[in-house]
Length: 219
Image 1 (cartoon, rainbow, N blue to C red):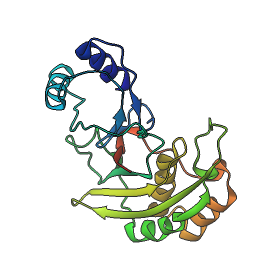
Image 2 (tube, rainbow, N blue to C red):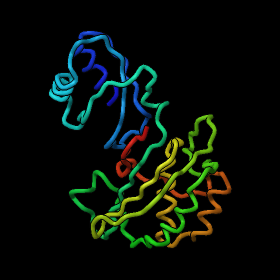
Image 3 (cartoon, one colour):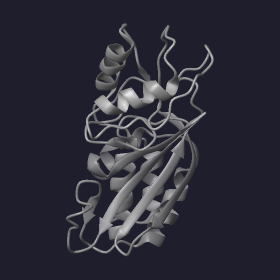
Image 4 (cartoon, helix red, strand yellow):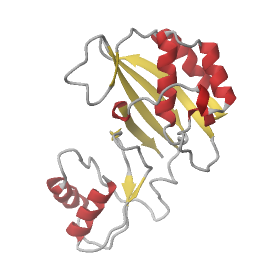
């Protein structure tokens, strides 16, 4: 996505543009509110730029808004927190409409147990247990500012998590482990113990990328 938008901006502005995104996402993950910035010496007004860019972008990418920012703004390093949504379709029958954008879980889930377990995530913790197996050499401590589960349709659940930043595959690994709680495979207490062990080997499966959405970046 970033390369596509960057190339088209360079084409429209007739000069080389370097686009900086607010963060990376795994292949197959979606974004409702990705943010990016670039610097350019141009007299083109934002309305024309937005219209021209959207006329050239493929159908699976849309730019919703464009605005001027100060020289100190950085889409990644100025961010205070990010919000992710994970969609779970919980039904014996898969949805032909949502199958591309949710994880189909057949067995009924105990959403109350999942809510209780998820509360252990709030605050500042070492999230090594939920880091990708091919982990990067970074500080694994993150501050989770809030979590919640919602049922938006009879079979559709949304897990929402907000944190200052996220480790690679952190949300997907948390979701996979919370589904184990919902299935009754592990208890809320065992979920907390997994967090405290700081070892990826104890956590659940990595939830499919297709159910994950970057909802919003807060500045």
